[in-house]
Image (cartoon, rainbow over the protein chains, first blue to last red):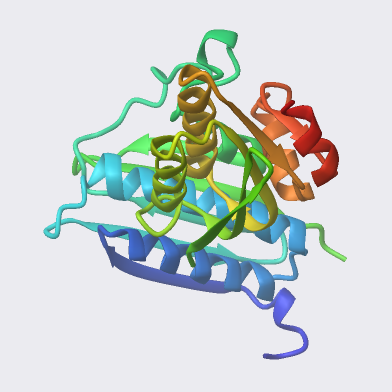
Length: 146
Length: 115
């Protein structure tokens, strides 16, 4: 690894199967890029968890584990930003209709915290419906340039 | 990338020592669910989850903790947490679950709290 790798822009793109193994792979790939971008351990954990939650949504809720559908993972880093985009080939998913996991009546629900954790851990969280019908989420962590 | 569990009996309290990652899947949160179900089937209703060596937990793992808590409570038992590291504690705090669980840092005190 180059000593000045943290300031070298990096781009990575993968098409992953709709499996839980891909969730692990995506997390590892994204965290490795984030590490090379100079992010610290706490940020690496947050990015890893945000990528994992986004991948689970894409694999489980988007592509519904279909062997015919792929998840596109794009990871980009430069001196200012670390960005991960995850796009599925599903039929679309409405994030707006998600119940608030912090509401007292929802506290003991066994699911529905993934998006909340992503929003909590990343500086930006963007979601868009793709023309092809899938959903793409983009996660951003701002980097402090020295 | 999986979780390992082992249970031991301290008086009438079952201590479940959990190590590794509690994440979505049969090798993660699924294992925790089965271990708790097995304890309940054996009639063990005082359960202390030792999470001291849990390196990572995702929303599925958090959901499994909530599910376990609800299931054990509805069975007339108690599920308590022991030795939360900073990451797990932070996650439970931002999800407002920290005060839902009875959390302990000392095993002996945790065991005594069941009686």
